[in-house]
Picture (cartoon, chains in turn cyan, red):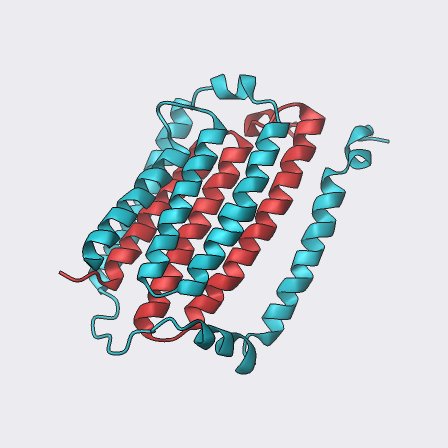
Length: 174
Length: 101
């Protein structure tokens, strides 16, 4: 049963992921964003299959709830009429295919030859309280956690400053 | 046949390659950002699979941080896209040639 669910979910993730970057039917970024949503939901299903319940919930909340919505808002703001008509250049296509196929080949050959963790004994049962203990009580990740909150604050201020109107309306050389 | 670690890693590798193709071949800045998100998601899948099969929650903590970083990256990236669109009236990466001699 697990095997069938794994194959369905991973097929959905891979197909949606490829349609995000190279969709033969539509060149609209809106369609790509919605296919990324499909990938995110199938990956959340795979996380549940891996007993990572908290990460699956966070994935759906943050990606589907925040990231994709932000993307869709910016897509509405930007006028894409002439961008959509542009074709992929042949040179870029060849470079992309060679680069990505070689990267995938190196990864897959490494995975197949090393066969990682053949002798696993005890798998992580994915209790969210275990995750919380690692994050907060053991103390190893306490400082990174606080630094992340600082980073989020910096990102808020930076995003507002970069996209503000006074910053962009003036001449470059003034 | 049970699903092992290598199955998850191969799915992750394929997703990463798809994202890499988008980041190289496409010229729309928004699509490039979406491709980077795809690559981050592929890395997340590999980390969660490692965490599950190693038997320790450290990988999931790492994914927790990565998701936060991805949100930050999208916020800043989209702010830059809006700023670029205001100044150049285009979001194609080949139109951004101000520094070309």
